[in-house]
Length: 465
Image 1 (cartoon, one colour):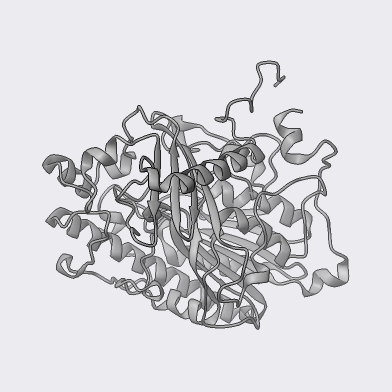
Image 2 (image 1 turned 135 degrees about the horizontal axis):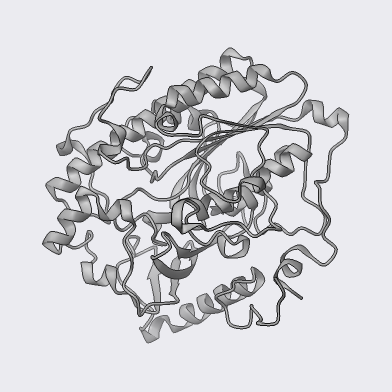
């Protein structure tokens, strides 16, 4: 059985399972909002960044306290969101743009295609960052180019225009913000943006995350990042206003999340919590409000959730690797949601560092498949004021020595309850042997189930391409 047959089944057919026309009329519109490189930095998550619009959205819906990206790298993470498959399964092993040139496998289906086939009008507004173009076949792609992609008012206005143009179909819109990703200078804060009052922060007022040292350059860098997060929040507010003005507040599901951790060393491209533990807020029409759900959920669950909300499904033999979050919306701590997996292979094409991880409520286990290599630093992070200061001083990343960050062991095992910052590696300690063996076995089983090509025996020289 080849890779495609394993993941899809031997009798996979094209097309989506459709609902009937009567049901279609009552289905909700769906708005997926993706933040770019935002950690748990929002007022509703206890942060000091001013995010009144995200806070309002959370107060009206379900905030997930344990939401996890399946990879902390932009294109691979978005590919998981769009496909319901882990990046090592869907082929998006690294970044899509420029010479990195990573791409989905040709058989992979995406949520815009499935939603279109289910009768939705679809639009992408802003950042895509996944290849190939034909796989993400939205009906419309608006504001795709820089600098407009960082103009949050332009994104909101484009969304409003698309919504107003719809007459008979429900809509599915993906809005890909560029904030708070780093820009060439200061997170795009060097110019004024239309309809966005600046919200500036003093470096002395920032809160230093546990994965960073308290250095002046780091404080200044975080203050600029905070401003970009607040601009993103303003964009969310403008989108909510567009929904209200078009009369679609009460028939639209809003999903907000970030693709990966904040663009600082110790977060972005890491499978530590700072890289993958991210915001997720879902507001549904007439749903429960102000709920903080403690279910451990993954971005591989997003496509199944969208399809469930749309009363749609992929072909019967096309196997998604996540599950719908609809049953847990409005619940505080549902049972059976107690672990997530993560998978990283590349960021930039010359930054090979494959990792696989299992995160439970009590432990985090990371398998570094090429631990002999030094951990690579993403280009935007490497050029940042924070990394320049850290590397010049050989400063620790919080309490983690810089050398331990750059040169990692084959296995890492952390007690999340007693060591939430993941500093004390228990993998070599005999008293934690049982947990290590159980974690190894669970990760191995998941890798086999998801046809991880980095797992021995999962590829064959006799396969035809």
